[in-house]
Length: 296
Image (cartoon, rainbow, N blue to C red):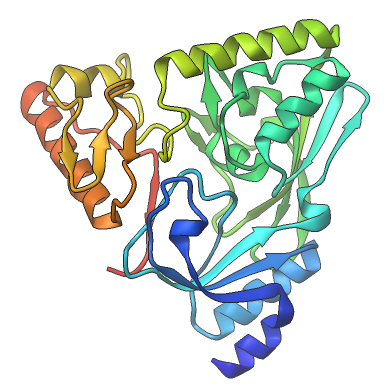
């Protein structure tokens, strides 16, 4: 793999522990974490990685990700520089795919653009939030997305109107292998103080109901139609259930907390215990919201 190392150059860091790159703080080493700063650079890295026969994925801020203890023998892409910028354009915010979503929420509040307040406390990137159609408090990102700029598998860059990319609960039907380079969010002008107050209100609600200060990956399971995963997990008696240092949160049952030294194996074993108990108690098969990757 020396030629691939040489191709990736100084933008790449090798054998990076994913426990340092994910909000769950678990996971073995990735063969490479590589920063990319443009569509052309991203396409070149993906092409070289595929020619080497290695997998790749966009890392984002690692906020919805469980990497195995053995790590990930592939390339994790981190969109940086111009691909992580935020700027206001009238009543819109243009966010690079690597831009932190919390920074977009803060910018909207500062300049008086309403509509994104519900996203406060979601720790991912704008690109990751767009790709998974992140949502909370009855709102989601698809409703705000005017345009999506995508790097396609053939290396071409396409900008699509948001309404042309189907979306649903925690999903966006992007072309397979596409990378979200940029998101244009349509917001509404309002008084900055009013936007900031609503943002603080949503944050207070999160703090009251979720373990926001703990090492988690957000909600572990998707809500089944017409119900809430957290309610089902609590009803199955799983609050406080633990495997090693991984524990179902006593504050919100759809969160699994790393109490300090949890392994990915602990988390996976706890996920399966929760799934089994909910299935046995209710007949509902919970579907993961987090993404599990890495070498078995």
